Length: 356
Ligand code: UDP
Image (tube, rainbow, N blue to C red; front, side, top):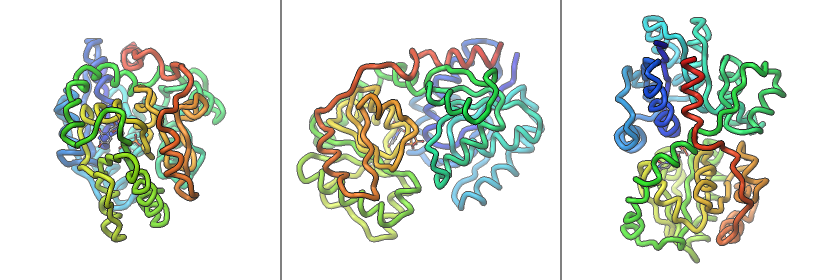
């Protein structure tokens, strides 16, 4: 029996952990200990995902949230070390690119505990992004790197990571999309509650620091979404950070319909019926593709380059004009058929590798 200490803390990690934890349990060969750093901590950003996706309650909750990167990551290092020292797991499992990912990698590496990284090799090649720093460090410190795409494998090879450490497994978010599709379809009633019809609205999300923390970019996004909303309904589940920055800057929406962050099943219901999706989220870009909904990425670059190549995703940098036009033009468009994220068995493959 292998003891695996899984470190999570933020919304996208709860979605990624759901299929992997299930697959690990199914092996009967792993004792998974779940550590929640507390990075996302309230009902709408954390609890709902554990309930809806059937993730076991965390074995440890470090209850760390708020503060800048240094304060948050420092507190995580301090609180995580004694937990891992006592547990002495066979391996630490980390996901994605948040401060919780970075802290998990650093503490484990210093304690000489091997680290496995899910969603390894993603690169924006923009080191101004905190996520990019977290990814690079996490990948360097991991000895099992689970890559979602061919591009991710290429990026890792290019950085000199030994081929035997790289495992092209597919994308666990695709697994989650397949596993929860039926239950999400039952949430279609949400559209009527919000007063929109299938295929007649744009779904938007904005939360990335490069957009929320730059007043010019945030105002440009608000204004572009307002322009779109003049001709097509726009639904925006508002991330707490974006809400806080908008309030601080006195920015408001007149036409765009904002709602508090929604759970995963409601989000999938909203994504899969949208005419187009406008987002700066990594996960939402992929989900748009899973549901064959055209996507406009409100960033200067994307890690999910295959979606741009296939024609499903269009970059619309908030630093330039043309965001609203790009979103309206995306409606009704489509891209090429392909399956760049595996066959829906990434979690099973990862569980097999972790327990071999
Ligand atoms: N998501 C959600 N509710 C929301 C917004 C997003 O459940 O109100 C889900 C979305 O479906 C995707 C994940 O959260 O699975 C993406 O997380 P986020 O955008 O916070 O982070 P990123 O993917 O950019 O790291």
